[in-house]
Amino acid sequence: MVTTAPTALETELLALAGSVPDPELPVLSLADLGVVRGVRVLAPGKVDVELTPTYTGCPAIEAMTADIEQVLHEHGVAEVSVRTVLSPAWSTDDISAEGRRKLTEFGIAPPRAHAVDGPVPLSLSIRCPHCGSTDTELLSRFSSTACKALRRCASCREPFDHFKEL
Image (cartoon, rainbow, N blue to C red; front, top):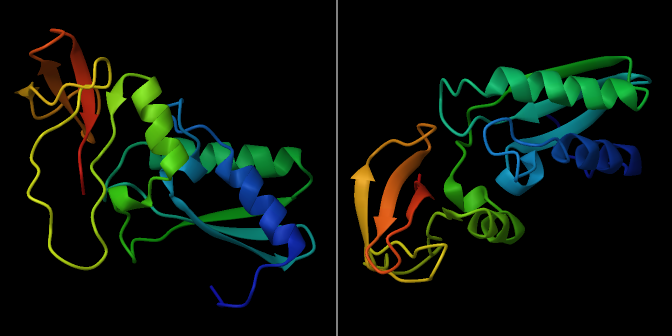
């Protein structure tokens, strides 16, 4: 895509595309997840959307594409092209602060944030979204989706998903 400033219409269409719920974690929108990278109006009634999967081969990308096409068609865009863009790769750092808050409220431990510059923090603990304890244990490296691990809190004994850092 061309790197010009988005028009008011492109900003509106980006918000619509971003409002689509994630098919695997419907508590999050695609904007919360940070996977809709851009929207460009190519001609009247013709739009190009850039979508980055959370990982290469993510099975949800087809559902995301169909849902984006549907919401934009419903808002009067006749021709919608959703392109999968792999570079720059998606990272859990792309999840918005609001998305992290929603994950916690939903009972999923959000991924730990990474510092942009400076030393990498050596905190390996995962905070329980139910009671806040960091005394948790890994039960399985994979949970309901490949993006999540299954953990249990030693304090409240509740199991929970942890959105893995990428």
